[in-house]
Image (cartoon, rainbow, N blue to C red; front, side, top):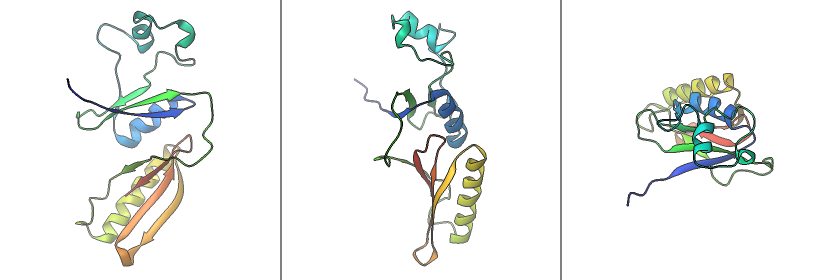
Length: 151
């Protein structure tokens, strides 16, 4: 039996999170399973009661997939409660090329990516600029204030 896994992120607005993280990760919204025009149609065909189907957009995807097949599926699960504390788990977006890239170049790559994500609705929380240690990272908040880092 094949063992697979996904990341599940609790949120208030799955469709908004899909839009943000599609761009942030360069993933694609997961299409509905074959033979179903929408996710709502798929869940109905599985016998999910109407009152358990997601409100709002309903037919819009609530999950993302890596278009190249290398990364995990990410599902945004709508929950009624708001986020109140720091995440115990967060994503690191590895964009700089690592320590094999000159520090100033890594700093610029990370800064450029942070600016791109701010344009999508993210917020900068903390900048970790430690050239003496060769470390530069930016801690950010997504559109529902979930922490993630760009390194």
